[in-house]
Picture 1 (cartoon, rainbow, N blue to C red):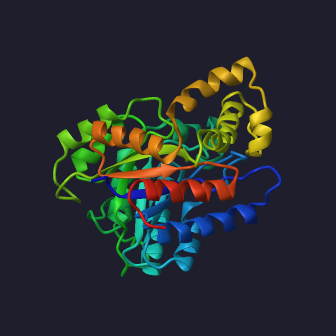
Picture 2: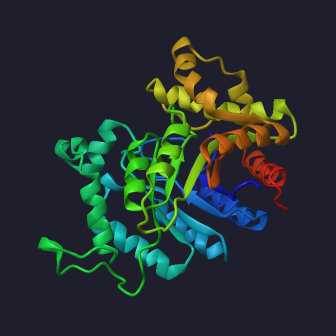
Length: 334
């Protein structure tokens, strides 16, 4: 049996597209995900990236909750060092009140951007370079009612106080969050869609080290980059804009996603080709049978309890079709 499937939506912005169009397409995707039987849709937090409109996951979650009825919605994730823990607790308690039992709060410790933008978000160089994620997490859980409030914030209550903090996940692209999630008994998600580190070691380490806490048993999700189409050529065409966008981002010239035709015609510079080689190796590109085989092999190696699919594509129709084919390949019904 394959584990449940979910979706990571970065809200892609393509050439010639307005942000309003990108957001509307993401809402269409949330509706489609619910119809196809996906378990959840998560929204990422990225900043100063022209190809990504998802800067505030809580706004996307609130809007998607209004156009869906059953599917879980969450942040994949909130980059906690960018925010005051009280603000995060209040935002996600409010979302839980808006859509009870349907919200997830995934937390990461990276800035989700470049160092200069991180400074603009965090307001001081000390905050950019401090390593206080565990303290911030404890403060957030205290404001969420899961730990006692102590010290100067003892009299501060995150509102609304009659809505619980949603389930807190720890996200990571290395073994740091895997070990922390295991120690705290939290669910864990590994970002194999962009991490150069193999997912097996952190995901198996999480399972081996897990101690009951918020959960009685471990639960690990694997996020993968997938581009699925009826033919290999169509899948390659769907995947190409993301590859070019990543190459330009890594070489200091971030742009919106090119159209598939423009991306296929574009020749990478030597620097861009070198920068994109790693991400190309992480993309799972092909027909439904090929995608199923590759994802199944990853699930077997990592013992993933759930798979989150990220299809960062400029072509909205191709992106929707990719998710339909993935759902069908793993036994879902359109």
